[in-house]
Image (cartoon, rainbow, N blue to C red):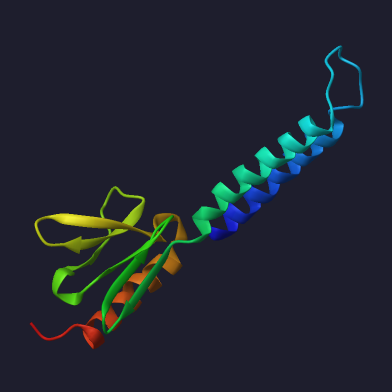
Amino acid sequence: MPRIAVAAAAVVLAIHITFAALLTISDTGVHVGGADQFGLALIGLVEAAAILLFTQPRLRVGPAGVGVRNLVGERVFEWDRVYGLTYPDKGLAARLLLPADEHVPVLAVQAWDSDRAVAAMTGFRELEERYRPSR
């Protein structure tokens, strides 16, 4: 997903900058100035920055618990609140299982990552055995 997000952000930004540069090449009867060009390029920059948020998902496992960072912000769940990490049959991303049938999506482990997703699930289980206090 990070590679796709970076490529998509670059394409969106390139399109906006190109259109901003081409705004003044012909006379359409509408006055288009430098501020309009700058505004269009700035909109592209904001959209590219929003797309780059998809490069942020992380799953961190350690003695303190499990940290899940999706698009914005990281939440750390202590081991006594974590029941495991599962991958639903019909789902985009893995889920961190919590008490009371709650779950948190883990965007860092996604279906289209195939081998990387399998490695992440295996790595999580190994680290869970190492860091989880015995029940």
